[in-house]
Image (tube, rainbow, N blue to C red; front, side, top):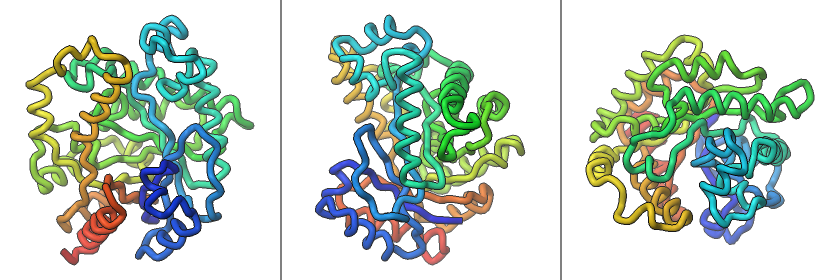
Length: 333
């Protein structure tokens, strides 16, 4: 199993090292037991990055894309009023199916240039308001069917119908791939027409599906219970872990009870998306595991890759979280 750490091409991360990629490489190489970065990329040309530093890539995430995939420019104009078609790639991939396929294709070409072991793609969709109310417009299987169509269309544009980098499909707590039932994951296994893909299980996202989880021990038990109930074909396809702890149950309960923020529907699209992202960051805490029992999750999944995935305000904070989680995994806390 290779252990990785999360990083991004964005200034919020690179400015900690003076935007100096050789310095980022030197830092990473000095980390104990860390093989390299899982790098979140964007839509702009990639900087010059030292060879071998990036072991995996995380693709950008479109929160609300399903309506545009199904209905094209009519839905794009309704969902994203005033947004130029070229800018829609940042919101939903593009103004219609053809452009969404092309955007994802270009992201995979860009990722492949880094020679990573895999590229992460979120299988999810949520309306901005539904992120607060959890009264979702689409079911898991609705989103899975659209994802199958999208990924098959993208893969078909490459030689032999295979993407140039292995896709890791990730779970969220919003509808789509959640791992709470086997049917959506099995539909992906059945429906995808290419072989170069696997699942990555995000432990924090899984904890977020249960607002009753309040403690780390409860979270570990919950994750282990979900993994145990997965079908053998699904468990066999899990090759990666995004490893972190999220204990936002109390906040989620308060949020669901409160409902939509005041005048939410009167806000501009960017304001709605900003509030939805802020809410998501409160839910998805990206804490380090502190209990040695977290190792039971790794033993149950037996991943090829484990990414320590944290949010932090400073590099010192990140380093502390990494040290705590590595100590927990080693059983020395």
